[in-house]
Image (tube, rainbow, N blue to C red; front, side, top):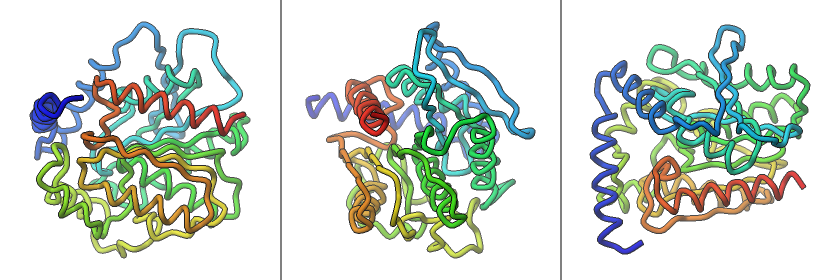
Length: 296
């Protein structure tokens, strides 16, 4: 993509994000759901609502013959304060289409009403629900974007702590891994990131983890022990302040002898996979390739 067009696109993303980023958190959540519902309206996809112990969940499936043995469990983003299964359809429908697998997404409780560890407790609830349905841990591929990437990693660390079996693999899009915000891209990418800024992230941290040790691996998975982790694939945009969150995670996984790959997408922004751009389609194809590789 030529530089000029990319600049224009980033301006547009910035404007759209400004519409969504309402300081009134209720309105912010509503506008996200509205965008998710519009962008994911497709005849090729079926959404099936489920109740998981009183928590809303949904199955996202393609309307064609597809793989039933494996499932994808997706953790949505939104800084732990916003986001929902409906907003996440901009990603979950693409995951279902590109992999031909069923995707489960769930509405974990959000901060500030429900700070940490509510989201992780809910992720564990969904995990146990899938096991009760008869899936084995190795039949599940975990995916997550942004704070959902944080949650996916925290879930695997928690399963590991409890000596339980781990998922078959993890695919992360722009994961938020370090709530101490110590990555250098907070400085080096501050001027170019069209989606996130430090002030917004600080608000999210306060809502979710106020008074907590931000180096706790279940809050900042970057500081976790990754020994024995399943194969992991990371995608991140070159122009995001969370670039270091991804690159340092990649290094930590390498150090832990985990099979890990990372793609940094030139000129792209935070969770660009949601946007209707060619790089997003390529990234989804790459996610599907990773899933097929580990399911062989």
